[in-house]
Amino acid sequence: MLAALRDKSLHLQVFALALPMVLSNITVPLLGLVDAAVIGHLDHAWYLGGVAVGGTMINVTFWLLGFLRMATTGLSAQAYGANDKNAQASTFLQGLTLAWLLALILIVLHKPVATMIFHFSTASEQVKLYAEQYFAIRIWGAPAALANFVIMGWLLGSQNAKAPMWLLIVTNVVNIALDVLFVLGLGWKVQGAAAASVVADYSGMALGLWFVSRQWIVQALPAVRERLSSVRQGLGRLLKLNRDIFLRSLCLQLTFTFMTFYGATLGDNTVAANAVLMSFLMLVSYAMDGFAYAMEALVGKAIGARNRDELGRYLVGTTFWSLIISLLLTLAFTVFGGQIVALISDIPAVQQEAAHYLPWLAAVPLVAMWCFLLDGIFIGAIRGREMRNSMFVATCCYFIIWWLLSGYGNHALWGAMLGFMAMRGVGLAIIFAYQWQKNIFLETASSNN
Image 1 (cartoon, rainbow, N blue to C red):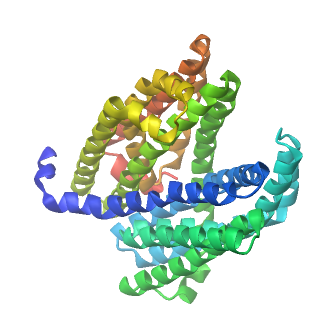
Image 2 (image 1 turned 135 degrees about the vertical axis):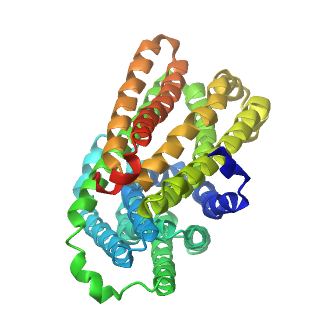
């Protein structure tokens, strides 16, 4: 199997899928920086606070529904590998239908949900006011935002990573340009920032649907009207798969939310240091996500084709490059961690506090790469149940580790986070090794859910 590393075409396949996704991910934190810079130049801090709180509510809501992309990637990749044109067409139509149904539910329920959330918020009345304004406008972008998940997943499953890359880049560039125009140019303040995001989401959806139509023609897929009758047939299976991935994502969000809120009780310097270090953690996520996306698409394709040798080659090639990137990130955090922290914060107390926890962060890339890659394997294999169960076990381990180390303050949080990532990888690795050894991973993957 290691002989596959001498195959240049394998490395080209991996990078053709991974590199565009890594590059497009770079625009995500850039958008956040521009948002903060534009709103931060208004005359009161509560505008920025309102956008931060309202934006967090929207982002968490949409992120929890990210299963739309993951499930669509796995299903479309398997259909692509099996050269099943009907299944590939049906996967897109079913995903889009589900996305718009969920968006409709969000729009209908957004007022009572927002009221309940803000009732428990400790933010000032001014921040709540502007957060509610931001949320009330952004929610109208849900049909486009959720459709974009499906579009990206379907294109990626069709082994096309360039189109999703341009979709993300164009969406974020439009958002940034409209931020400046609406907020600073037209003086729309918080409403302008929200409107910019909504327009950008719909612009992205229009571009994405155009990419889908081109891919549809290239692959000679059946006419949409011929497959509309199939939408209901596979919707139950799609809902079951999405349910499992949603529960898995909920557990993941729980751990990060706990780390943020509990960290806030440990003092201002600790909160600021964690914010700096979490930005590094997001950097690791963006880098590893690109290779996880590649793994999803390649594994799904190999499983659809029922080709064990091809599957093995993809696993080796993607793991090899993920390991290289992880080693480089660990080396960078170990050698230049202090300097990188200084670039983000020039407050000596925050720099000193962050330095105490840099060793935890330096270990993250090498530990976390396995859970990212194995997530990609199981998403490509559309095995939502295993992902859900292993994530539940890892989440329990997170809180057990934190409780055992709770006397060590913030070290307990970072130790628990590292243990959580390790257990995510270990759990899925045990399941995968067993199924691979028994020769049942390839044969039963698509029927598992």
